[in-house]
Image (cartoon, rainbow, N blue to C red; front, side):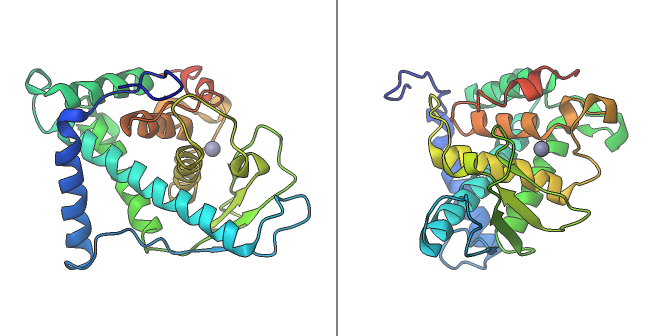
Length: 250
Ligand SMILES: [Zn+2]
């Protein structure tokens, strides 16, 4: 499988239909059989401060809504694939589950079935899947997340949060609205990945914090979670953020 840019994305042809069915079934269960579509609950602070993109309120809402919907899909997809990968012994995995395990091992240095001593020996992949599920639940109608545009970010920063001073607020930087062109990663995927990353900080504030000096490793690095979720979805990785994961110790 390859897109217009020639990027070789990871194929999940065999499992795509199954995945769609699972997603539909999960959504039907959650909302009692009504129309299966995620309903993001959020606010966008308008008007945006000077220096933000000159967009209408409708445009901002549309972009943020699309990003939130994409983050929900990334989170659910990552969870479903990890749950499938650890549901059977590694030798029994089908092609899709083998690919999930390969990607997981690339980002997190071990197989998703590896027991985690500090999580009651739960498989590593399940600990990650649970965090993804929590994100999908919150974005799909849990707490109300408030998004705002911050025109004064560092040029390479996509978004930022400070849960101590501003709980449930996610600041979106100019880079979020104007993503760099990247192979296999369209703007909505890029933005969905950014929302997923920030939600890890929002929901698990004491677990995800940046800086090796503060004990950051791949397992508690929001870039690693984001990049795994993007690749598991068939997107290209965020090349400008990949080293913020892969340069860290396992
Ligand atoms: Zn972060």
